[in-house]
Every structure is written in structure tokens, then in C-alpha cells.
Length: 161
Image: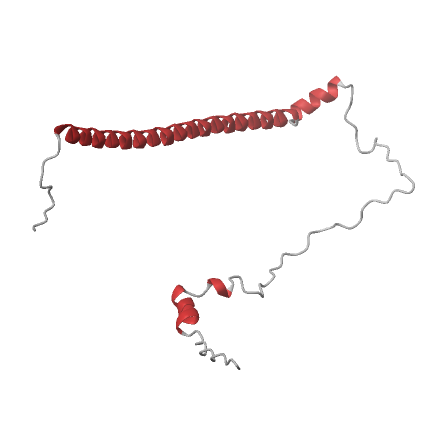
């Protein structure tokens, strides 16, 4: 009896049509699944890109605000602005000879300057990488499998009657 890949009889036409419809629907579902995943990833990517653009705009706005504040600080500390402010507060420039120095009893000015300790490099005495992470897979296999101690055969258990 000869066995072949094909059947000995022909299937009914409606079964063949049903098989083709089933194959078509499976392919259609697979294409729809791939398209859905693609759209999901594309949507998330677009949303993330938009968030990045918004954050970059915020960074630009903050940099402009910082520059404006630096400009205002520079204008406020300029000599012309300080002289105008002195004039508006009815203050006059004093000569060092006209200044009155007052000695406050009990006040001791700070005489020593506290400086940071000099930089030093502490040598690393311990090993940074553990030995478990320095061996290769081959070394581990050799230690655990090929050079493992062979268990001695178990002695038969003697039973006394």
C-alpha cells in the first residue's frame, strides 16, 4: 500500500472553500495584529516626542528668564543705578576721614580663615570586582562539572534478620 502526501479522495468543495476562508481570516487577523501593534508604538513615540518638545520649550523659557534676571541684576548693581538710588534716598558719599567708627565691646572679629582640607586620594584597598564576576563560563563549568568530586558509591544497607 502506497502512502502519499495527498489524500486518496477529493474533499467536498465547500470544505476547500471553508479552509481557504479560514486561512484568509487567520492571515487577516495577523496583519491586523501587526498593524495594531505598529500603531500603538507609533502613537506612544509621537506622544513622547511631543512631551520632549514641550520640555525643550520649557527649558528655553527658563533660560530666557534666567538671562532676564541676570540682566536686571547687572543693571541694579551698576554704578549709575547705585548713584541714582543714593540720591533718591538723600544719602551722600562720605570721606573716610568723616566716617565715625564705633567700637562694640565684646565683639571679636573672626581672625582665622577656615579653609577646606587639601585634596587627597584615598587608595582603594579592596577589590572592586568580586571573584564571582571575574571567572568565565568555561571556568565555572570546569569547576562545577568536570572537576567536581565524584561521590563514592553508597554502601549497601545490610539488614539483619
